Image 1 (cartoon, rainbow, N blue to C red):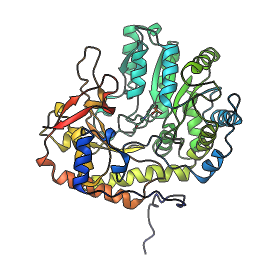
Image 2: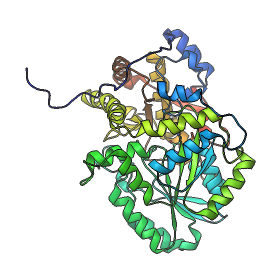
Image 3: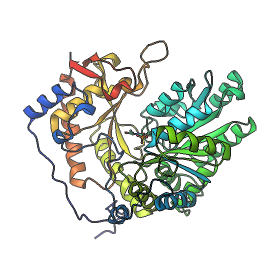
Image 4: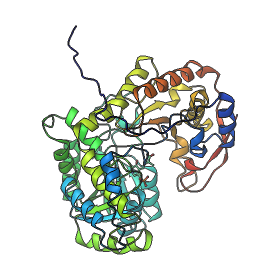
Length: 460
Ligand code: F0G
């Protein structure tokens, strides 16, 4: 037998408890999808077989995290679990101060409210829906400074999350550094396909912004996944631990917003972490209004404990090898079938290129929304639109028309097996083979904020 050249991504855990899934018929799925207005967000989870809507809050906790749940100190103030979380954050992320929040957007709300004034500009490496919404709500204007390759699904650039320093310099020259409260950097970049930013690029962004006296805040939601890509792809990092890489990443910023529902393997939780005492003072004060006292931020003591333990598990290499290995496994198999996906495969999801699936559809016939619907009808797999519906409208009321019109197959951590992955590949392939017969959708209801969550559609 030839020795294998590459080890499989096999899971570094075994399964102790199972959650049965309901299998549905095509007729049941037709009825459920019509009822849901062709929006996968509006499906009941009972009608879903393999749920690839999001990796947010959907991961499986470990026995150690569940054990920690029993040690929740539910005191209103000064819970011991807050101090455990604070210590874990300081050790792994390296920031001085912690403000817990119920989830990531709670932290985004605080940071945007404190630092952004009406008329300000906030440059970022591609937008994320809630992040941009909070920046705009505070009176800021978001400007995309990501490299052009990030908007091209076929570009094989290893760090498609990188900032184009020329674009950043141009925007600083245009509006002036005083109108830029901070630069907002995500690691990895969700909307670009879960693509990483390189350490070299981040360091350059830090140097450039520092020269102009501009702060840099990190969206550290999937920064451990970003650290994995740095370790695999960036010269000089192969022998560093994920923990070391994470610390270096955070070291180039003044603080971070965090959705613990991703990297940190919890079902709910987030935080704002800061180095600047003045900003911390204000955040610690404001959090009382919106989330809860500054030692619980809308979370139970047990949730704080699960997140503290999740931090330690997230930086384990065996864990991350299997987590990203699973996503790559699906991506490689889809690619082998000739199915158009965003390349390279990102950290948390495989993104299908809906424009390439359905060249017969105009963007206003919602190709990605259509593809997500077809996939659900085929097999009960739930995915998410990340195209024109998610992009929303600009301040003049026009549709943003993003270059990327994608469907995201997002993998919860430690939840699905390789057989589930195989079924997913087979189902995407079935839709691919029938692609010529597919017609688009029209939007029949459009909510004002973050429309993708609740919009309704009908078949054309
Ligand atoms: N930042 C990024 C990069 C995210 O992916 C998310 C959430 C947030 C911030 C907001 O965090 O949900 O805890 O309030 N992303 C989820 C997703 C919803 O499906 O990609 P939250």
